[in-house]
Amino acid sequence: MNPEVFREYDIRGVVGRDLTDTFVEGLAKALAAYWLGHGVNKVVLSMDARLSSPGFMEIMKDGITSSGIDVVDIGMVPTPTMYFSLFRLDVEGGVCITGSHNPPDNNGFKIALGKTTIYGREIQKIREIMEKGEYPKRTKASVGKYDIIPEYVDDIISRIRPGKKSLKIVIDPGNGVGGAPAMAVYKALGMDVMGICMEPDGHFPNHHPDPTIQEGIAMLRDAVLEQKADLGIGFDGDADRIGVIDSIGDTVYGDQLTAILAKAILNERPGEKIVGEVKCSKVLFDEVKRAGGVPIMGKVGHSLMKAKLMEENAALAGEMSGHIFFNDRWYGFDDAIYAGARLIEVLSNVDDPLSVFEALPKMANTPEIRIECPDEIKFEVVERFKVYAEEKYPRFVDIDGVRFEKDDAWGLVRPSNTQPVIVLRFEAKDKATLEEIEGDTRTKLDQIMREIG
Image (cartoon, rainbow, N blue to C red; front, side, top):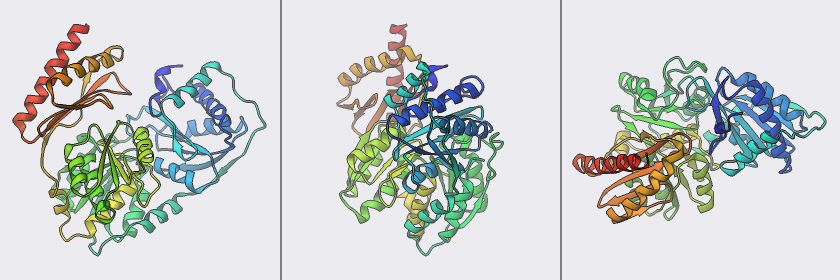
């Protein structure tokens, strides 16, 4: 068993190498042991469209029920629909078999206890159960099936207040599982919707299923411009991450989208808390404050953001990666289809949808930059850079790596929780200042890595 598949937020690896049938069988029994330790008697089980998911689903069913826990099979659905089922069905946990936005030969498992996903130390407890191999032996439990998609679609529709303007929208689920429910929701809201890459296909034949990178959103951009659409909405493979293209073909990143959605909430409910992670633009935090809200900076990671949202009782949280969490008219979990519906609500209530995007202050910034750095030294590299940043820059925070600021420019250096890389991002009012702060940071990191060897 490769212990590296037990990540910070989920269990994930390469099919056939890390995730074999034998591994999944052991994982199912270990999950059952973990759940039984928390008094769980029934769980929900779902999957994405990956080629390995149906086989893993059957192994999971057998392993969980053989340990005495009943299973409700809700089939191939978006991950947020599994989260939704935790609030609607008589279950006490669940697992979604999904490789999310990763390559076709990957798969994984997002695990819920109660009404929320587990992460960090709790995932390591499952690894420890597997390593011991001591699994419960009980009378075999039952498997039932349930079609929850109609309820999920109806619930979203009931919570959205679309304006009189019918938007022309292109959606791109990337051959993942979000296409059909998103189409049903947005059409029911009175929008003119067309879709590309709609058919669920685990080969992902058209493009990589990640709408937050250029490769994953290029087809959507072309379709928006060709159709003269008001909006393009893309989803990752399991539809918990959103990517957006405006009517002139510009990418709207997760932090920009969060700022737009936050301002709409604060217009009705001033004083609400809004959470963004350390990679988010300064614009997000400034716009929240300007709109009468309380900006809060949190750690990167969908499970950590969800936990921060609930801890602060915030109305909204958003990540650069496209995970958007509504605690306002929704259940608090990340859901790209619902986030898209809330954006449609905002845009359909104004005469010029593009003006909503153009109202955000313009900054020079980089995308997320990843530089290779071995796992065994990446944390030490960041700690040494922290000492340097504390001396050089007037302001810095170290809640997740190091985010340092000078005037209106800022940079971020943080070790990835999931890969042997250090993540960087920079922003400034002009390109020259941006290049200066990025160049200085890269030079210092190179020096530190040479010193460590």
